[in-house]
Image: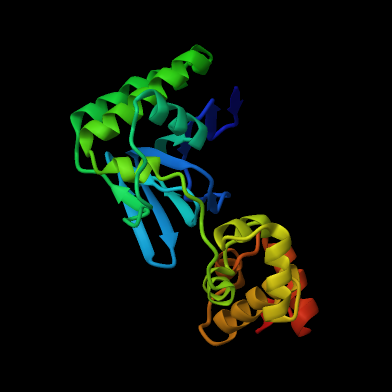
Length: 269
């Protein structure tokens, strides 16, 4: 399967990105492990723990089931370019069975890792780049072979990555109130918040309303608006710099909702 636009080409589970302006990523929930290589420019990954910067030439691993915001940063006068391979659970389970990998303990290490320089991993990514000049040549069978190669090279690079890759456990039930107050600014569906707090969607909604006396949608909107009001009125930030940070998707909707809630446009504070 191939999807293509001006700045991104997706072939099977491999994504090539090329942008000439600073750009925020749209997806804030990491569904599958991602192995990435920054060809030029920088990738900034933002979580509650801070910002991790992946510079040109770096190879990194990002673990599934986490919330983050990403920014693609081109070099001065140039283009940001990167390659990402998504290692889905079904593929990893098959690999684990075929290679008789013993069950691993629950992974407790870093959720984002910058790997040490490795000529084999660099050579691997260099071998992929020509396919994105001719994406029709990257057939499904070849895509599977390249994904298999990626896993082999990761385990060759660092055997401890077995725990990162082959822990198939799902998030367990955690404190909902604390989690939501820490993560309300991520614009993801309620189903993803439910998964990350170890609940079914129905259980999440039920527990949520008991704790907050409001539906998830109502509470999230009010929480985001309150934080935006604080950032604009007390910190002097511009609405155009705030709306994405607090969890809104577009400026016009943010401005309309803000004025409806507070009786004044955010630009007039």
